[in-house]
Every structure is written in structure tokens, then in C-alpha cells.
Image (cartoon, rainbow, N blue to C red):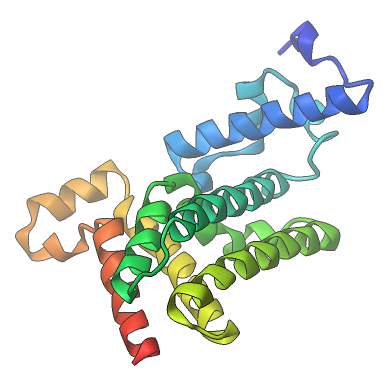
Length: 217
């Protein structure tokens, strides 16, 4: 493939940022269409119009691209969730659980990434990349925790447990809810397997409501 002229090697910091943004957007689009697990580095390079070798000048591995998208997802989700919580002077456990469930379910690519990050994304990047990613998540967890404390009086550990449960279950439930067309058809057509058809938001809401009811009792 011949590289488009617009994707000649970046010669400035600004041009490099433009290239990186294009690569990340290409990966996000492919992840939304196919699922993160099925997107290769070659796929991303083709989507953005670059040779695979040229793409590697910007990101060390395929996993590094998706880990950066996961960090972006944390910032975006945290901002949306905190905006909902900050709009309330008071809230009960059910309202907080609803805010968590609604904002996570609205971000299917982020839910997919949440499941993939500990399984493989963190395992094929530099230690510096892992550290940077973890610092992003810690910062956002602290911001969310402050709002949960304000509304429900949860301490730091309780807030961390809530956020860990919400994000961990969102990632797992998204995988269950997205089995692929052939498997989904099996679930739908065999009444004995109906329980395997998962809707992320209502199930996550029930889990978090129960979690908070126990935590705040």
C-alpha cells in the first residue's frame, strides 16, 4: 500500500499529535465495529492509511493503542458520571447505582476495553506505559470517590470497592452481552439458554444497588 501524502512522517510535535489522534480514532472505530479482541495492528494501519511499520513510530504495540483509548475512556466516563452526581444535592443508593450503570452502559467500547486491559493490554507494553495508565485511573477514581463520599458518606475503601465492582462487572457483562451473531442466535432460539442473553444496564444497576444497600446498611 502506498501511504497517502497526508501521512508522511510527522516532522513536528503538532503533526505527531495529529497522527496519533487519527490512529486512536481508527482503532476506536474498528473496536466499535468488531470488538477490541478482533482488531489487529494491520487493521488499524489500513484504516488510517499507513504502513504498519510507519504506525509503529507512534505506538509501540497494538496494545499500547488500546491502552491509551482505555485511559481516554476513564477520563470521559468519569467526567460524565461526576456531572450527574454533582447535579444532585442529595441521592440515595439507588440513584447512585443508576448513574454508574447508565454512564457505563452508554460506552460499549469502554466496557470492552475495561475487560481487555488487565487480560492483555497491560501485558504487551512498556512499564512506563502501564504506570501512566494506572496513574490516570487512580486520579479518576479519586475524583469519583469524592462525589460518592459527598452523597453517600462512603469511605475511601468503600468507594474504591464500588468503582472496582462497577467497572469490573461492566467489562464482564459487556462480553456476555456481545457473544457474536452465531452464538447470540443460539441463545435466542433455544429457550433453555435464554438466561445467557444479557442486557448490561439493568443487570449492572441491580448488582450495584444491592452492593450499595449492603455497604451502607
